[in-house]
Length: 107
Image (cartoon, rainbow, N blue to C red; front, side):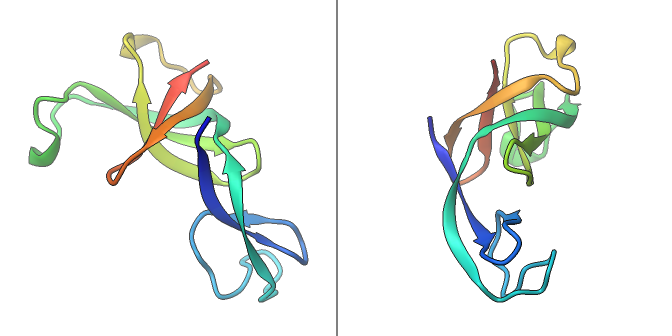
């Protein structure tokens, strides 16, 4: 399973997915690179029925906000055949990552 690159604070163990000079939780500057497991739950989602020009011909598609098991929230696309039955709280796992998005699937 693919991993997501992140940063863990050595002082309080909180995790951020983008680089920070200091931890947003405790202000420590002791951060280390880590790989975060791509398992989580759908926190929120939306179905895009008319997408921006770059994503035309991909509609409809789902954009999800995933609460990872390690704590952070991450936005991505959901790979699913049945977009009408997506629910908050569903378990998802990172399937792949490209230059556009993290791609999650329901497990």
